Amino acid sequence: MSGAPRTGFVDKVKAHIELLDPVTWISVFPCLAGGVMASGAMQASFHDYLLLFALFLLYGPLGTGFSQSVNDYYDLELDRVNEPTRPIPSGRLTESEAVWNWSIVLVVAVVLSSFIGLHIGGQRGIVFVGSLITGLVVGFIYSAPPLKLKKNILLSAPAVGLSYGFITYLSANALFSEIRPEVIWLAILNFFMAMALIIMNDFKSKEGDAKGGMKSLAVMIGSKNTFLVAFLIIDLVFGLFAWLAWQWGFTVLFWCVLAGLALNVFIQVPLYRDPKTGASFMQHAVNDGFGNAIGKSDVHEHNAFLRFQIANNFLFLTNQLFAAALIGIKYM
Image: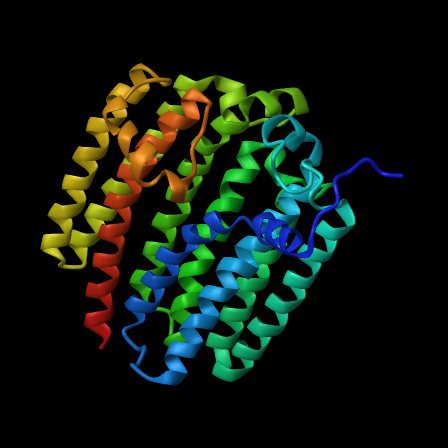
């Protein structure tokens, strides 16, 4: 007889939803919204709102949820150390139930994206379906052997940037219009921003990664140097963003992006000097404000990253959506 606790139906459903990690779904929504806005082609009709809902469903609960479910399945041993309360290590879901979880989500995502791709047709349909399939494949090989891209930051960071920051923009734009050249640039900016953020997010599993042979940047070069690398990438993204805004003739956006860069650097300096407790003035935002959305952490460096993430994401995403709106107006 198994010693695992018996779980009721409602608790099983909750565990399956938790395996899809709903808090991570939010991460793709700004890129999707930006891609749609920049198309300048969405109409205030039931048809287009239904397409928009399907887009968010595909890349949120289905796409991102699939990658999170697969990750939990293949990282069971690591999660016993890093996150023992997750559905599988805690015994609320069995490994076979987890396989059913991500298999069903995968089938639904492929069928729905194929239907939408056929509906919009042409090159746009190919881009839409191709983007979603690419995201699902990358999401699988990110965690699954033999490739298991997450084992090395040189492979894992670009994989995350591609899945969360690049294809989301292209897919959202293709849903309503031909790909705008400015959207490709916004997708590139989000690619590198996502890379920088995942580099720092690995702080939360530094101990388990070291024991499991995972080559995260935090394990290889230490916390302080990891912050430095990530901050350099982020500041270059803001710098390129400002230059693009100037080239596109969006003068107000140019100054807004520069202001965002200056505020970011103001927060980055104390974090680099003290990777554990720097920028402590932002802690209340994690404890009392955004903690429920971005999570909380007992790992000092990861908690410091969360403090930075709140400010950085607000500055970058607001400017990104501002840019998308201006691009959309240009093409209306």
